[in-house]
Amino acid sequence: MKSFMELLAEQLKRLKAKYGLKANKEKSADFKRDSEKRILENFNNRIGDLDKYDHHECLVCKNRGSFMKIDEKGYLVNVPCKCMETRKMLRKLKKSGLSTNLQKLSFNSFLAEEPWQEALKKAALNFTQDDQCPWFFIGGQSGCGKTHLCTAITAYYLGLGKSAHYMLWRDEITKIKSAVTDFSEYTRLVDPLKKVDVLYIDDLFKTGNIAKIDSSGPTVADVNIAFEVLNSRYIDENLITIISSELVLKDIAKIDDAVAGRIAEKTGSEKYCLNLPKDSSKNYRYKNRRGSKDSK
Ligand SMILES: [Zn+2]
Image 1: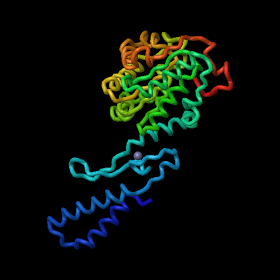
Image 2 (image 1 turned 30 degrees about the vertical axis):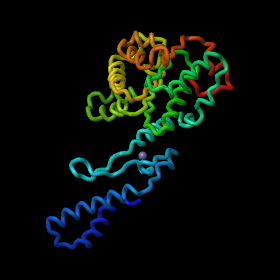
Image 3 (image 1 turned 90 degrees about the vertical axis):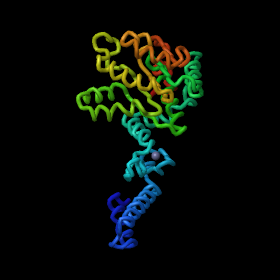
Image 4 (image 1 turned 45 degrees about the vertical axis):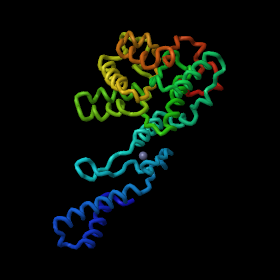
């Protein structure tokens, strides 16, 4: 694939031949406009190959990952396509070992053998059809299928062409906290979390030892960043937020009332705010090996 600079050089050569070297002011403006238009068209017509790496098809950018446009000041600029957020998420899922889960962890493959499992699945499915409540929360008992259902919901929205970001809380919060003194790096990390169509936060407030919330629980910085991101998404009605946590909402309220309050409100309280108190009989990672062993 030719680089942008090579394309530009070729284009300039062609147009110089067409307009001659003694271009007056008007000719020069035409030359510039014509040149930019052709560069823009050439670039935007090219077929990219990003889908070879992540199997994600994008009709908007033809899998190039970006397109060219003339900005409001009249400059030719290269803008990243919306699909890049999704591609980033797919890369992250791959890194976290969850990539195959997008196909594997679907609603169809969620085993609902008991009434409580049926109720979780029903709530997750209803959520995807409900425009009134844009947030989904599932907290508590490990191994009850939280990741499975949240992944299935995320995959549903990806299928609708929405951009999505997978945030494995413990990993990402560490990176963000290390950037708090670097404004541009902090913005680069936090902005997508505030703006992406679908944000899936996996294991909110997980710090390593959930049994000791008081001593090794989330820090003030953790809570502040969670609030900053969630509050920004709270204000924008169109953004979908999916949260899983080993904590039930009551525990989150002990950490931060404002964060818990926003989750309760946006999930329509009991509708899509699913709290599963500790109950080892609901840990089907151990109970039912025939079920998805990747489920949390
Ligand atoms: Zn695209």
